[in-house]
Length: 503
Image 1 (cartoon, rainbow, N blue to C red):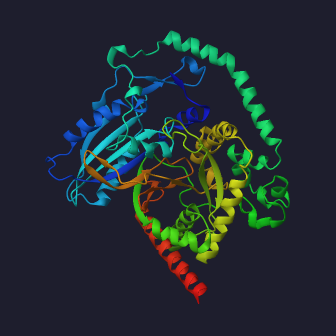
Image 2 (cartoon, rainbow, N blue to C red; image 1 turned 45 degrees about the vertical axis):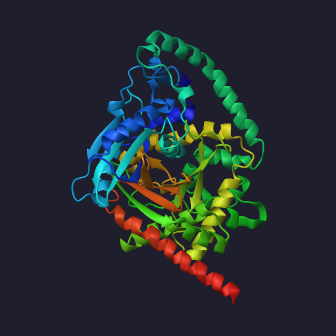
Image 3 (tube, helix red, strand yellow; image 1 turned 180 degrees about the horizontal axis):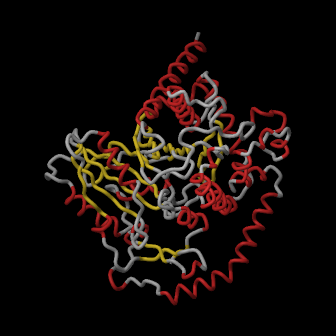
């Protein structure tokens, strides 16, 4: 058995009737030549042995009695593939908006905690001879990077993990209540020592000077303090090492103004809308090279353009710049992404108050560079420990109560939305001979944060997934159109800049 980390367990505690805590992918495949009338039977035959080779998909939660300690993962002796692998069709004519509506409805439904925390839907009936697979997994089991890696692990040609296959049926041992109570009592006895060790790690990291800003950011305290307007206090950010010496505001990790209110920074319902958008990585790289920024900076800039345009058309664009929470991976190079969460949060100015697209991009670049500097010298283990605190502060019971009470509309939000950039498969993938054409993400929406933008790279394209609260962003397709428009504008400016240099 494996015990959940404190951050993984936090995602279980954060779940509520209006805030399901799972992430998902929507993979679009082309129907292979010579396929049967339905691809589902063949896919079942293909997927069954591959799923059996992945422990991640066969384990279920084991709670510790009386909540004495964090839950564990254990092999489910009654694992039922038919429960998890499901078949559904889009009604004719099977267009993309119908598919988006279908997966949004499924995405709003929580997972059953008495079974392994995942579901997979094979969706047929799409036009242009396509089918889709929607897969959702609980955030306690994987982060968004791990969810995307599952697609690669199940694809044709992936190395079989036969050595990882556990005994099936009655041979798989499942812990009983007495054993779990004993583990819980032992864990409760060790808890003071674990808390002391975590506190010592944090204290040692804080002694590093500039590390204090990273600790405050990872714990969520900085986001809450900023929403209260502390950034306006003269010299405070410099004292907290949130500014890099003489460069002043240009290198500040946060803008001086707190995050403004937007239509989606309110209490959420359990219902979701979702839409996808696709842009060319080649075009993103043209912009990146022209203005000497990162790919993630360009992603944030075109997201900023889409937000700015969407709100301006509705006379709702705030005068203060919006702020994004940007997850930062803490995994070492080559470390497996298939288990648990290894992320910290960075806060970035989206410069939505800036009319000039290039100035907006460069401001985002400076903000992200400064935000990442806060984590220099802070051990990843410390950041993961603090991430649990940050998750509770931002999306835990207190945050949910604030959002539902209506008081959240009178207090500035800690940030306006989450924008996550996940590196997906670089090589072309297939499943049962069906080529994978596109890979879209779906993510979780938190109380007071009714909009999530996640982007996944696959081959030569970036696939955006906008997951929103249905009641707060009813016209999410309008928002998605601004993504391509924002990149097109930056590409023209990049070409013009290159032409000027050549002249």
